[in-house]
Every structure is written in C-alpha cells, then in structure tokens.
Image (tube, rainbow, N blue to C red; front, side, top):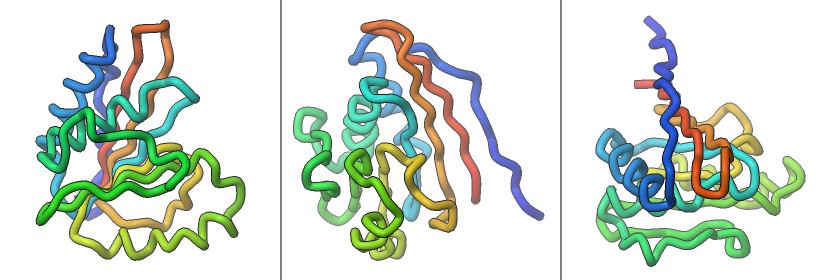
Length: 149
C-alpha cells in the first residue's frame, strides 16, 4: 500500500525566532535517512528554518548554522549527521550531477536542501517538503508535506 502524502495546514510565523522554534519542533519528527526539501523565494526564511531544524536535531547551535550558498554543502553533527545543502547557484542538471549528492542520500543522515525545487524527483524517501512564503518583513507562511514512510 502506498502511503499518501500528509500535508499540514499552513502555519504563519511572526518573527525569525518563531520560524526557528517551528524548525526545532519539526526536527522532533525527523529520523534518518530523511530528505527535507525547503522551497520558497529568496528571503522566505529557508535558512532560518534550517537553523531551527539543525539545532532541534542536536547537530549544532542555531548561531553555527549558516547558508551554504557558496560552499553548497555544510555538514553538522558528530554521530548524528545533518547535511545542509543550498542549490541557489545551481543552474543546470549537469551542475547538479557534479555535486555528488547521491553520497548524501545513502548516508544515515538528515539532508536539508534549500531550493529543493531544483532537485530531481528520484531521490531518497521519506521526504519532507516545506514550502515557505514571504508575507511581510516578519511573517512567513510555512506548509509541511510528508511523504514516504
């Protein structure tokens, strides 16, 4: 039996601190291996939410989590690994293929991907797809969809 995606009602956060707190809460339901796709426009809060998820998993403190825009992948944690990937600068499937992300999918880890809409669909499951929407300078609408086991 194929499990249908489970989509939550959107949550509106009213500050970066609330977005981080939501990330910490979401982290409680993540078990490796798991791919977390963060989707949304520039400035929608993807890195802020990732800070909360990484901190909630106990892999790093919030202030240690930064956008991997230039390095493309940050690794956090010791025994419990979290990879934070940013595909913002990736413009083609050829560039994506050269990153070696397949190695991350086979790791017993949580993989968080900013700009997840740039990732092809044949990746690992279970997946969590998080859509972030910019409402105002402080507010974000965040919708979470879970698929897989």
